[in-house]
Image (spheres, one colour):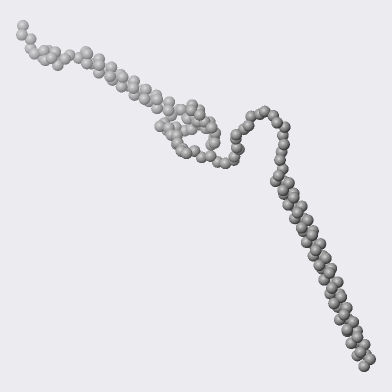
Length: 162
């Protein structure tokens, strides 16, 4: 029985020790939580202060007289309101391109060079045709002035009465 009594006394002492242990653990946890809360608060405060300082940064320069520019630089693509296809009535091969896509051109700029041999051949053919037409016209004019008129022809056909 003595053993039972001793066991009960030990259990009662252990039960009394458990609340003390729980209090110590609870106090340690609360201290750790409090330290974490304070640390997080300080970190947030410092971060906010740094952001505020970065936003409120002002550059100061000495006063001086100078021109102010009123320009804005922007990157992008520009498209014209209209486009024009350039064509040639002469069918010829392009021998060289003097501009690239995106180049700035103005009136009178040579955009490309065409192969002139076929154009020169057509010009020669047209000159021959004009020369032949002028020759035929000259012959017709000559015949008109040298041939007898219809009246003269009638007189020449009539027998003469002398």
